[in-house]
Amino acid sequence: MSSLRSVPRISASTTFSDYALTTAARLLGSAGLDVEQGTRVLRTMLSPWGARRIGTRPDWHSDVCADGSPIEFSAAFAREGLQLRVLVEALPDRLSTSDAQEAALGLTRGLIQDFGAADNRLASVSDLFLPKEDPAGFAMMHAATLARTGGPEFKVYLNPNADESMTGTERTREALDRLGFEKAWTAVEEYARRGFDLDRIVYFGLDLIDGPESRVKVYFRHYDISPAELDARMEISLQHEAGFLGEFCRRLTGSDSEVRAQPLVSNLTFTTAGGDTPVSATVYVPLWLHTASDRIVRDRVSSVMADMDLPVGSYQLLLSHMARRPLPAGRGIHTYASARVQHGRPRLTTYWSPELYDRYPPARYQRG
Image (cartoon, rainbow, N blue to C red; front, side, top):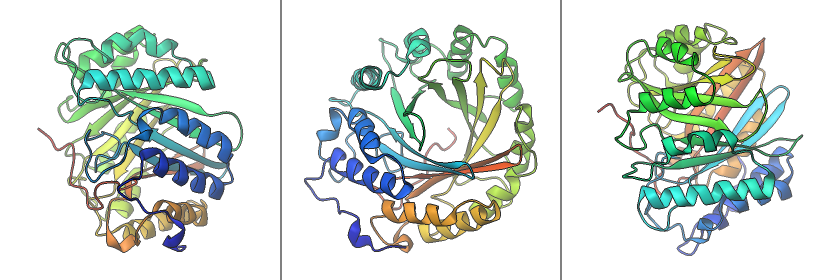
């Protein structure tokens, strides 16, 4: 790993923008992506809340990272190229979900004005996920994907449990209906056949782009399930290649049984082009509670990537630009890893926390 001296330290006066923009510039430059475009995107995503000082503990404990950090970077590796992604939760002025809604809507307007993001689908379901009366939990998270070709692409994550007027299950079904995926609920129920207590719907994702390939995603958190069983469930999608998931989980977590310390997460993806059958299913393996340090995670991810013939060197270089401390001295940088093989083409994504508040984050989202 390269020297940590090139990674700026966070001081009492460091703002979220200070941290995020310098980190993004290092990652984009290392990945050979457009630094100017990427930092312009991030400035919009950080406006105006990025001017706040990070502090020593989160005022608003964000859903983005396990330690409450409101910013997450990730990189998707494939033989066809590399994508860099950033996920943020706009911080509210006051500690309330209503104020978080206002901050999120302001961010959305910025993406529409500055980059032409499309919000037609979001507008059709916003009253479901952004209720005016007694909202609870997080309001909305925004993600941007940056690649060597094409402009930035944006996505939002919405809260199925936005208030108590509907259950998360009811809200998700109504949203699918409004978006033209009425029959897709059959696939969702089949996928969660153990019941929505064990296969819990936790996020609803929307691409902020138009067209038949624009994605609608339903995310689940799975309690007390083996990777092999989840792998069998994922055969419901059009592009799933069975048999990969069990070994992937075992090599990353060191366990063959249920991933109990932190539950597995997955999604089903629907598009107009694909109709009511999921076009893909993706699993996200939690990493921060399954090893003693990020060095062990790095070695495990590197081994898996080498066997998938993916660029291990690129991953390790980007990781060196994320880490602000030696990898053995904590286990909070790597949050999740996901992978899938479609038509013989492997793809692996690693998700990284900035560890703004904790390098040993505790378990989150335990059942009950």
